[in-house]
Length: 634
Image 1 (tube, helix red, strand yellow):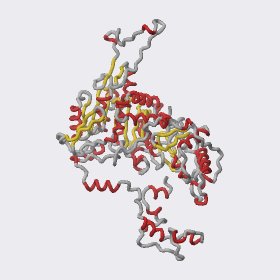
Image 2: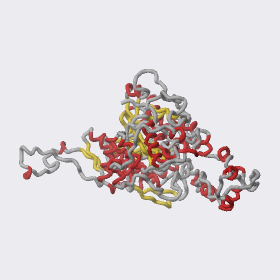
Image 3: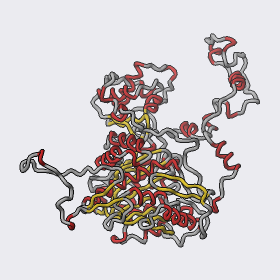
């Protein structure tokens, strides 16, 4: 299977899949870790060197682990990412099952029934006389090997958690994932490593979990030999994992599992395109499909770094959840596959056959990427994880959410990059938004495939070309007409609606338009679990807690991009400062009730109203997404 790159996006719309790729910046070795370097090399952030951890005042229980934390903010912990850790345990369990089954070893998962079936030849003896007793007649040397949680499996997986902080994730691996040989819980902070040692003893897993204090990059570079590589590497840094990826793709074994979390979603979602290019080698666009685009950029970056060492990645599961993205990939060695990562045929790559402007909306194209263009999930593996979690729901606290998210993943179209959104389509032509089932039914009636996306609640993934999709929206606009006279001739809506649809859309609801996960009412999209539930603040040197001034600043910055509700009196005075256009034309029938001025002379803007409140100045002066949109950035 070839691994393509996607590089062009027109106002958030999917276009051709395999296009150009970016160059790679070599990693430069650094000296011994310093306190400043540790800030980029540890999930816990700098928190003091040496000495025993502060007095333990808080103990949390997550899964099968009990973790003690100091009272101060010395080591990073975010309870919202319990879903991340639960899903990781489920994925590694299925990965261990696959790896150990090839060696003739069965794993025993707590709470999971033994599904192994004994095949009996009914031709030799009657069914009612068959009495199966497992392992009854087997010699001691022929007993099947099993691996249970909490026990060392000599042929099991070697796991590295590069940024362990409190060691919660590593301890949960030891207590919940069978078939492990060892788990290295590494952190650059001495305070964090002392806390890991304390928690390892608290959970009685010292025989499996090995605390380690080192820079995660140096530790992984020291395990590049094939015999010393890890079978599973988990990277969950504070922010971007970009600085660890080069070392990680070299330290994971052939066919090993690499688990990576990215919490720098502002960068991956297009707010800082230059920063995204410097970290991941791709340009992110601010589009409605930014969450799936973020997943594909991360996968592209992983594959690009692996290609430097004649390795390539195969995605198992790629999730966008809450405030982060999480990818699970296997890393293989293969020179032929590495060449196929660039293009399908071994010839020079060509650019997309597009004009300077979009044929549908008349707007300029935006260049984004390159990014991963192949499927981002292995559906067979996802179904294995989903079945394991569904048959043993008591294993994880977030089992309902795991089942809901993975069910939507299995319903996604694997060969369709990115997606549309209902509000994006309707707002482009300024019409009412159709129901999800109506749009899905129209696409199905037209003979196209359609699915949801786990990355966005109102997303629509379809293999319908843009022309067919806009024809469906033109037909919908005829049922819910917009006022054409209000449309600017240079607007996308004017360009789209002036073309008559060649496709007759049928919005009659089809039974197969409602996906199974939606019919069953699964917990597909997470509601905010608590106030201020996003990324937690960094752990601070010495465990300093956030000051009152900082908490006040955080409160003030909440919803900073939302304009506060304007006082009615102030709004009335502001509008009265502008002349009424209809009054000048002699067509205003509101009289004194008109909110604008009917003065025969040109009204001067009141000095009591700020200049930025003037409607003609908002586009030039207003910061944030609105000002960017007026400049042609979607």
